[in-house]
Image 1 (tube, rainbow, N blue to C red):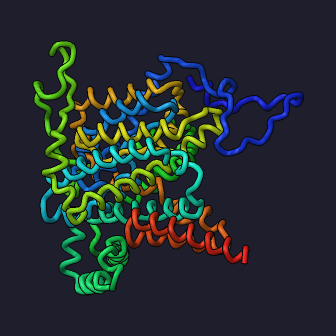
Image 2: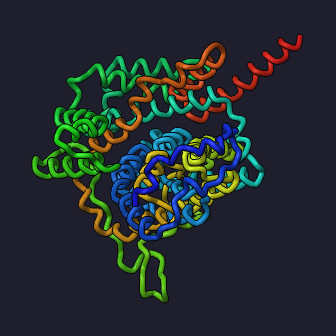
Image 3: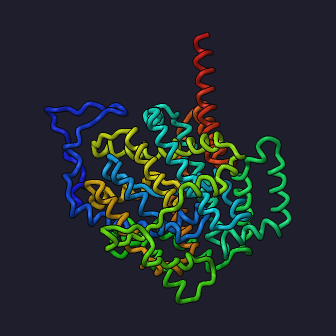
Length: 498
């Protein structure tokens, strides 16, 4: 099963290997494993188990109830498996898609005014539009453009900004007793925090867009106010983060080599048991609603009920308040959703280029953008946030012996069919799930090697994009960063000609 993980033999000296140009196709016969349905089934089941904590954690990042990450993950991945051409590729709600959706929709403000149930419908409606724009962009050939023409400094800066946003979103949940709700109370009661937020929002032009800057200052205030922390939450958060980041070395000391995802599963199980044993009174996943035995999609003449409840698409698009979040303008909505689609697809491009280089698997940008569109449409129709390619899950899929997209289909089936048994995670502390998220990105934020490697104007473009993404929003950061990069290069070329 793990034969595919072994390094390929060195090339024969009689047949030298020529350097591969970006975007060229390589023969996959030497590096791609042969299709093995048994291996795919096992890999799919492993993926289903190791991904559950991420599903819950990223639901928190979106801003709606944790259990929705479990109840909505399966259908979009199942649909994706039928359209993707890359066996290892795994999709779902990621830290990137979660942060972008919440930012694009003004999630915090909408939640405060309308509540979680209405917000969940708003997110699902946005997924539909992101899916539609992805399909339209694929039809227009944007997949190839996104693959080849987006400047490297913009990609690197945007990646860093989104990773930093993940930490900003997760930290309050990690150390405060009730996470974001506790932080909202502090924003109202702490004078210095309240006045600073007012100053930021009052800045001409950018103040109205500076939600990121407001959130960053809230987190900075939380960091320097340890007396506001809930000790048990903070202990679980920092301890879990340290363990996940250093699990290999910790396990090696006792002679254990952990499997991919084992550290995440251990943290989830251990903190859940701890929560039950000590009566943890901080934020937890909460009760997962039971599923009506008669609800869902009827298969095989009613002999089998798939526990998935499709939503009314017309109601989502026209009665969820989606267009109103964009000033009542469909054009503004479509532009924002298109930017979201392109940004999400850049992750797919990076992952696919990695597999092409390391496994020789040729791929089609247009096909994968179409697959993203179909997955987002199904995600919206079943109540999920927009989905995108997940690097961590894709790498685990390759490592555990995936040979075809059957593995992704098995993973999706496990999530849907085992949903009635997911209530075992009701007592899982949210601070532990925040630790899982933070541990995945904190090294890249603390040591931005790619950004620091740029020089001259590329260094400026990269860091501008990074800070605009963090302090304004992912969409504004990427959009203005790309415009800045193109504008500077046009001026530079013109000056050279002169």
